Length: 606
Image 1 (spheres, one colour):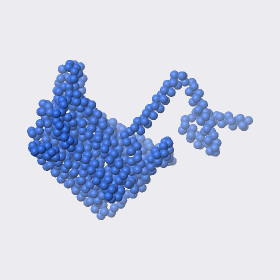
Image 2 (cartoon, rainbow, N blue to C red):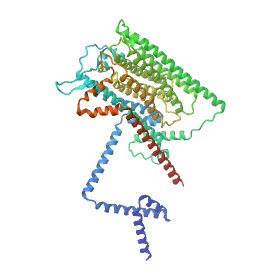
Image 3 (cartoon, rainbow, N blue to C red):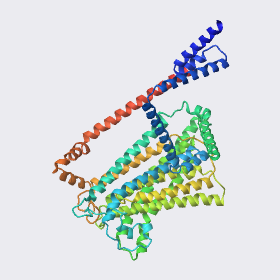
Image 4 (cartoon, helix red, strand yellow):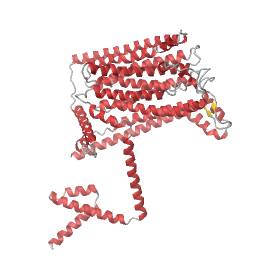
């Protein structure tokens, strides 16, 4: 009797447990006053009972439902495999893993930033080439100028009559077939550039918001370290090299976390604190004074550069050499002054390497953006107002081309003389602090600013930057592997990518928008060249087009959007308020989730 009673009681218990949810079932089994062996037996019986019920329930489904579920599962597996395949095809995926495993996230962040810039340039080149260059090539006349090779350095001569520069593009409506479809080059040029900048704005804003959310709002600090120690050892891979690379990567990440946890706050006396404050003030005064002196030198040299360009030279070689003076001097200043800033950073003795890098990058950005600002003033207020120039837009495009080319050459020379020769004649150095950190990042940002400004004057400039960034990636990667040792004390830079994106957005991108806005709305285009010749401003092409559309009933909606949305200050004010409200609500939701997470952690601990 007791045997059957115990049997039926156990069956009833298993049935009750099988009807519970997974979490309730686990808690109920844990509370049983039984041995671990008995609990395992009960758990296994419950799992068998749950499996039987699920099979019985699935047999009740119709054939059509089962077929539909099978199709959904197949598509899901196909999507996962396709996602894994594309993930493996990502640009430099394996190289970035090797760099991160050997040198840590501090060095990896710079290569990720360079990869992002290259992807950005590919996108820029495809847009400009598709909507501006290809239509112009269809209607272009043959170039009768001879190619000597000097044009590769000066950007003038043969290139002046090609699609590389603004002045070569026509202001006519392109049509290869009589009475067929036509292509308005004026509208194509300004709409392509305008839509391109809108997309760039959205990409930068999205990238900055995504990085900010990942590193500041929801950094997952509670479970990240535990998951690394308890779960990440199971790599789910069978390749031996991949396993070793994953182990090294995990080891580096744990070292970075331990360094951050064990970091001690330095305590200084009153005298030491005052001395440090004085050193910081003197360093900032010296860095800002150097930037002001460099800007003054570039300004006076640019004035003389215009005089040299206007003056007729005796031969082409002298003329080509005169054109390179300004970009060479600007690149020299941008190359050697950052070494002085790095020396100031070592002199200040910051508590962490991250603080030193942020300060040095800020000083480099101030220097290089100031020089670019002086050059923009020279281009928009002196070159554009010069009556001796038939096509001032092409001259500006040539200056930017030379500046980009010389910057690229100086970067390669710096890598060769500063890294490879140092290794050959001295010893391998811990050059992780000098190779990539502040100077290289500020160089990349300056290159992007020059490119964004130059897109209006040289539509194919992103193609040139694509080549230069690809070469720089492999040069810096080889130099890093051959000439540099991993840092003895690794440190984590989770927020550095966010800082890069913020510096790209402000002051870089917003400064570029102001320059483009002045050029499009305020300056008068050249009378003899370009798609906007004969107009009071580049934007006048849009106004004239809207006036034409007002005569067509089918296009009234475009006119309404233009007058009530695009040119309406009220619309942009309302849009800004909505964005701020959404941002505030999202922030409050995240704060609520953080509070809930803290409460749940306390409950788990108790």
